[in-house]
Image 1 (cartoon, rainbow, N blue to C red):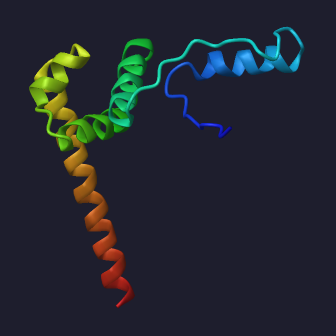
Image 2: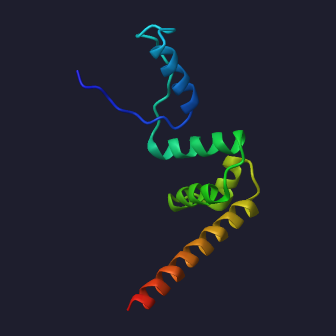
Image 3: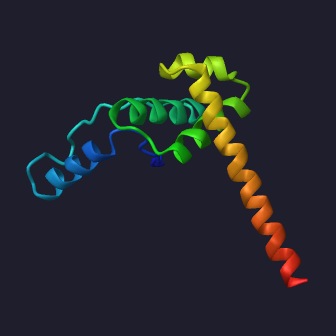
Length: 116
């Protein structure tokens, strides 16, 4: 029988605690852990939602996650509604993403030019 491999996108600390309890003999080897298997795109959204509610995410993490959703066809307004923020917040993060890309491109161009 083949064993499936899954990634944990939410509950990493809970999983770690369960593994420690198993290793310490505090839980039976066949302990059933409830889980939900979701598509990768939905997993990213769930992770972003959990981290946004639990702890303020770093702006770089936010714009990368927002950009991924927008690249999948979501509008800034859709992303804002999903995560309970203003559309202007999403748009500001996307501007931050654009300036970061621009900065990275400019830095790479200077490096390439100076090495020529």
